[in-house]
Length: 617
Image (cartoon, rainbow, N blue to C red; front, side):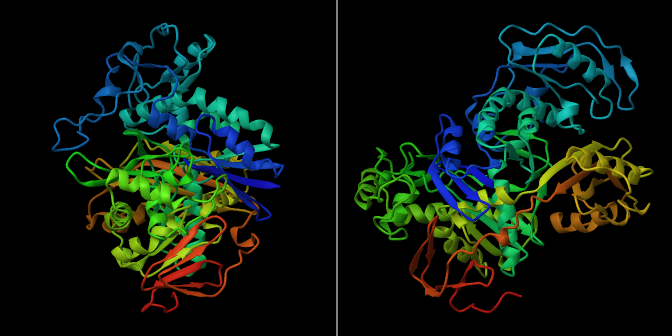
């Protein structure tokens, strides 16, 4: 039995291969307790897991004591960063404190040039102070030549230290981003290794979802936990992309509203948009990821009147303990869930997993005591989520009026009509098992390996295809697929996409490109595709300007054998005219006034404004 588990801030969701689902309250002090309770009745052979442990540890600064070893003169790079300001016009804005304090930044003599030439021989490796739990090693140009970095790591490991090297984690150019990623990985590794180790007894094989939307073995995840910083939301985005395409909308925006946060992601041609890096807790992490944007708005987000007298909602959340006031577990502060209950979007007395019926009187009392209005709370949180959808659509050069909104998570279907209406979106798709869709996405996710290699000569693409094939073979090896028998057109990666496939694996190769003189790049299937993508994202192109290549990357995928469309169907029928509530086992759907809900043949609820009921093209 294969089982998918997604740990959220309020609930931990479980979906089994036979279609059974369960939700249990999360246990923030030790998330593995909720995972164990959730899978207790399933006896899984394979446990596929999406986790928030790495993200929460970075947000809450609960990681290891880390030392940094870098080149002489570069100890302060982790603090200097890019010298930009978090808020351009706010002189009081502060960057997050670096993960490594000044006294634990150690310098080593030695320097390699960008061409691999040794400019200064490597000197002695410094002693690491007592009390350090992990060491990050990041030396100049090790993305192109890791010789010095490897020698430093070997010496430190011989001393019994846990070492993260930048060339092993993020072998890409830009020293600060590579250093930040390496430090974050070292910071998270002891905690995540301990957590993932506790899951080993729950199943014969434990796989963990990465930020890029693919599964890796637990021991591999424990080695590079920085890859897990978008673990659960990535599963939801992939499943929502499938649901949108099945309902006739290959282009959509996912809208995953849980108890603590809301995650949104642009879907094009049925696939979530990728990103080469992301910022977590104010720190850049340069690893493959889905382009998911997260805001602190969920069912448990707390409403308050701010010092200026304005109504504010979130980012602080009531979480699973004590939870919203209506849970009756001791919470006294008003939340979005309390407002949903008081306004009738959630039926009075509705029961959630692990809870008795929701108490509307407690919810009303909490709202009244804080001096906030339920309708106002919903208006504020809806506006915040509408802005989040704009972030991944309008700011990506995509008109939201051409997209469907795929609503899931425990609270997403309660707020989807308001968000879609504000943006002129033509339809809302509520997939089967919407309340546990991220867990379903984790269940069906493929084994995946992502490999990236810096390209040393940006203006010269000679030999690019052979490097692409080498990177592809490395990705295949990481998913345990035999190599050999592959061939490719020599123009691949320059004018044609390079894709390798067989019955066992599919590999896609891409390139990071920029115009000569630019500082930032876009990932595209081929060099020839860059100009059109640049125009779509930025509104212009520079025909005649040389295009440079700065990195080659490959993604290898092995299917899980579980298809979302093959899960047992969810019983849904009829046509519902708003305003109305559709109560389901794992979530509640609010059909707003002026909207109509019908069941699409794919099994999803399809919600449309009542005057726009035409079939999707």
